[in-house]
Figure 1 (cartoon, one colour):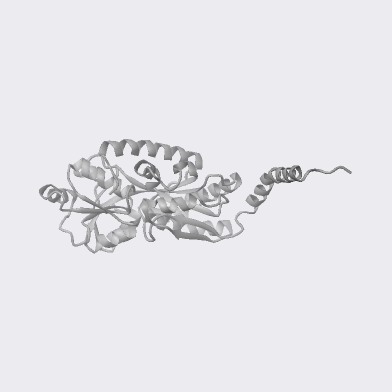
Figure 2: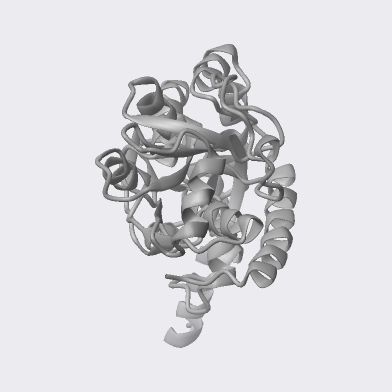
Length: 328
């Protein structure tokens, strides 16, 4: 009776296991999801990305047959939460819902705690939201021109809040300063919600914020909207003029939200996610809800989202270099 050396036998078992791995992955993917799915939002609760995650989470959970757990991981301009997803198992149970900073962080942070866009598989561009230039309700400024008059008379006397370095609010603020040739101090926060809270309390003077996040505070009389950072007026705020209408050209910034999975997530899981998310985002219920919030529902496919991300990186590279935007 012939025998197989132990080392060779172990090699044969290992090779057999490797050969079976794709089949096992396929079986797991077919059963996905078999437990709750966690969606990490790398910003504080109450901001635009958080609102998007929670609006999508309930119907997506119902469609998948498993709860969607929204997990807020704020800090470092969104890179802490993104790193947690990049390092998670690529099994479809940990996803990332990120925003504009996702495209910008690799340009501003040379030492990211993850490998940049290469660590993620884009699933869908969910929404785009114009930014409102908002001030406290008790602010003396009734329009952007009055605000700029003060900024020019006393350089550095005004401050603007953002949800953190590299986000759409930060970029809009810097473009606003560049277009108007004024000096306004940047105060970065760990998310949009605490920034808006301090703005409403008068701790800072102004902020660019997605209509979905600041709009309710404007309607409640806690903030005043002076302008819109888009080519046209925002849905739900027809009386608020664009900055271009007020003579401030070149500040065209929107906050976007998109869904990602870690690179290496099984193709069947990605396909299921993309299909279900697109069906929900382009459906009447979410379309209505987001329109009421001043947000454009997109629901792109993964390939289109990937091209969008590349275009964003190209655009913001040029803007950051031209404007000299840096971390504060």
